[in-house]
Length: 99
Image (cartoon, rainbow, N blue to C red; front, side, top):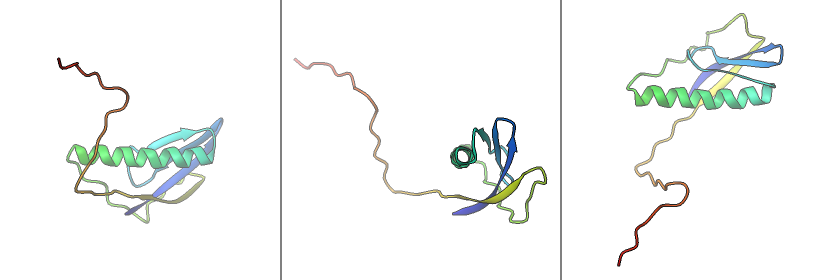
């Protein structure tokens, strides 16, 4: 688990959210609850993408801050590991009849 810092700014029409110490992780939503949920999803998506591209994750910086944010709070990145992946395609699978 890595602890980054989320920042939120209330703007006309909603809330802007970003991870202060993880560039590229940003979102916006109509309210704070949705912004928190979307920011968590964006953090996971960006982290997974960076890892798939062979890029390192930024080191969390507990002293990072952004004066433009209305408030900041911790946000946690959880990555999981397994030795096996069981994938099933969604929907119907076309099959040929064997005669």
